[in-house]
Image (tube, rainbow, N blue to C red; front, side, top):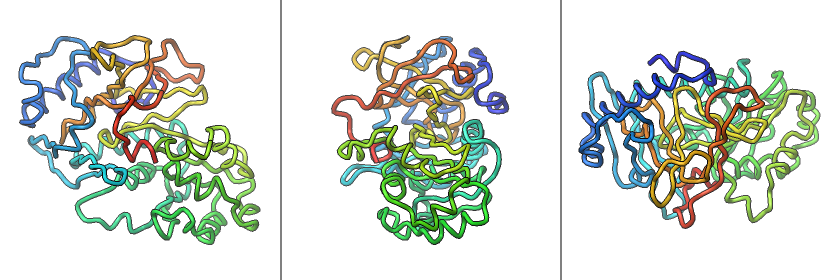
Length: 347
């Protein structure tokens, strides 16, 4: 696995990425009967656009597993489905999990810096107690573990933003130079951004570098007219120099591959992944027009999650980004019309 040894946004080597993706596809065709039935006649054609994919909705209906030498399957990751919806089921294996942890840590370090600091998670510690299963929210929080000197769950009730333990926040902040704070977008807003922290805590946080990290989309905040500018401004009020708000996009079906938004408002693709845009009607690849996102990566070995056609809309942006990161970049434009609401994308 050579690509993941590089910095995430180093100059790309397209031929090497294609070779790894074709080899990984052959591995899944040999080890997953359901994947092979979807693509029985596939042969390498020397292009990324010709690689097989699975629609994201299939993971709600099938528990897809790839068998192979030295693959040890562990827990099942469940998406945060909206009420009444069926969650996606993603089987995790030890080999892929190690690669995915390295991937997310490398991407986040590029945006947040390497210095460990306490991590405050806007969830309840009870989220860790489910045997054999892990939720998307817990998995997202744990992606920050390599950057954390310690992890503190600061909600008494994982579903109630009003249960934020401000005393615990103050206790952690008092001995720290800076903080990481992670929450799903709507939870971070309702627990922290839309309320006034206690006066004593505001004084304590003043001057500290605080990095707020969130994921999960904006659907639940649309009715409240919460813009990105309002969201960021409220969170950073009173925070010290070097503080930031990092919004990242990712799929529960592709753990370890995340797409933080850079200062130019664009999302960058790491060296060991690729993003294609397809016409929603014909599935033809699109160069610069808006269309349906297909996400690919070389990290998923225990289940055929390496090439997923999403229900999200995006648009590739050509050229080099002023932020200095190499590789493809894209704008995230929302959801396909009438697509099923996904809890992880719309909380």
